[in-house]
Image (cartoon, rainbow, N blue to C red):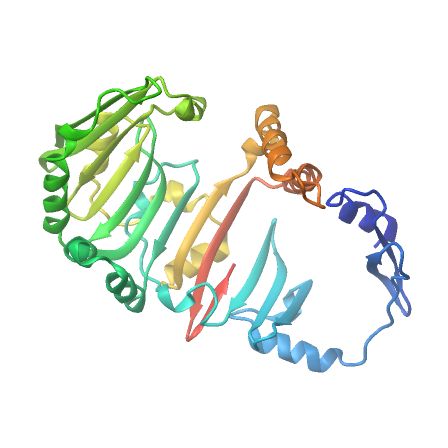
Amino acid sequence: SEPDKVAAAINTTTKKDGAVKCGGVSGAEGFVSCGAADDDPTFVVGKQADELSKRVAAGLVGLEVDRAFVAGRVRFSKGTVLSLSVEPSGDQIIVSITLPPQIMGARQLGPRPPGMLGMMEKGHGFMWGSLSEEGLKRVTRKAPPITAGPVGSLSGEFVLGTAGDPPGVVLALGIDDPEPLRGTMALAKGQLEGIPPTLPDGSKVRVEARQLSGKDGPFEALYGSIEGNEAFAPLADLGLKPEAYVFVADRFAAVQVGGTKDTVEALAGYPGGGPTDEILAMLPPAALSDLANERVSILAHVPLDGLATDAFRAQVKEVAGEVGKGSKVSAERFLEGLLGALAPMSSFTMWVRHEDKATALR
């Protein structure tokens, strides 16, 4: 590695040029150490590589430490240990972090076949997930008594992403019994008349119950729209309408924002059965293997090609200017550096993998 280039990359995240200095590692050609420019960032080669390698390997889930070009473990003050690795896989890079049970609610997640993933639209980003039995019990315990019926009907599966044509953003929750949620919708329907048609800022609001026709017959949905409110202008930039539908199908309940009646009617007839071949084709082989073996509880996919557009970079610059106020780190320079690093990549996929009693974020 070239120390000056490594230092330049790190300094893109700081407000002061040259804040970090890098130098070579004595006795280890090609390695670089970095530190504050005011110090002397030099290191010597350690003597415990074999022992440390064994510790790291013991913490990795379903991975071989020898395949990784970065591997390590981090111990926190309370004894929590995270193991991580970065390994090449064809034209892809796989980053894995093994999570102990107390981290990020790992025990609240449980793998299952992704039955609801098939309602997502190909070429768009999505997030699918599944709660474990323990996770479902936790949600039920924390729910207010008045919502015990609807919450108790949840299956634990959910999906968020783009669905339908014309597309809309959909959040769908799997259910075992639709009747409790349909009862809740009936109660909500009775309160619609109390919503004013005009808000104090002058924007127009419309809420009503609508009868729609799905594949399995007619069904009712709650509809809402708003006009003249600048807060919803970004929806138009995304090709979405400032309107939403809430409905309950036989196997799931959903909120759809930005689509149309046709989108909702098509979505309500989704028969299940899992992801389409087009959706699977977007995923890396490692994720496909874990899905096939029912080891996945969370799966998210984000196409990155749109990050290279001038419009997106302008938005990033505007947001970074607001976020970075008063910070010692330049948010704008950090995000520009991050976008530069992501530029060669076409997509990002994240999933939570389970094997035996271990959980890993990949």
